[in-house]
Image 1: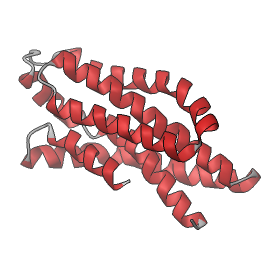
Image 2 (image 1 turned 60 degrees about the vertical axis):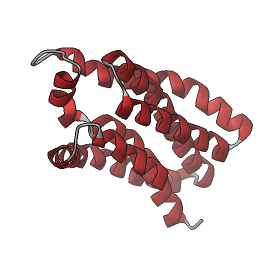
Image 3 (image 1 turned 180 degrees about the horizontal axis):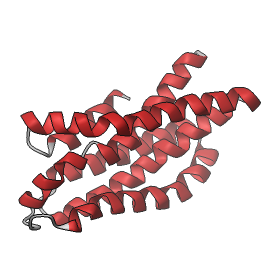
Image 4 (image 1 turned 135 degrees about the vertical axis):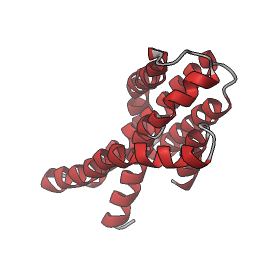
Amino acid sequence: MSEREVLTFVSAVMALMALGIDLMLPAFDDIRVAFDLGAGSPRTGQVITVFFLGLAIGQLFYGPLADSFGRKPILYAGIAVYLVGAIGSALAPSFAMLLISRFVWGLGAAGTRVVATSIVRDRFEGAAMAQALSQVMAVFMLVPVFAPSIGAAIISVAPWQAVFWFCVVMALVV
């Protein structure tokens, strides 16, 4: 792959994590209603908390696994876990199941994040690596700016679960 293709791919992989966090924020009110949490319930914040918990725990394992088995199989494994979590979230019959699925989703997102960073470090050195990482991080920082608006647009025409299905489609595209 050319340098541009690598950076585009790595940016897309990193964007999956940001989408998993920010795209669903506009769905909080609908989630409260769907799971009878009560108006203004802060419990919907747990959906983000368990995702970050999975993300934090997952990062402990993906790095050594990627070093042992290679980047590609571990990236595929991370995306597969990401997909399981996103699909589970979309189909969750209860709030507890949604939280479990979001934790799994976070575990998968950890794999995409760790492997994406590893790919940049493998491919570039010194100032070129710093520049590549800054370009990737610029994309990663832009996704949270636009993701809630995209999520709101999705919810305006489809049920709240559609934001999770959107993440499934994006992961499949990557």
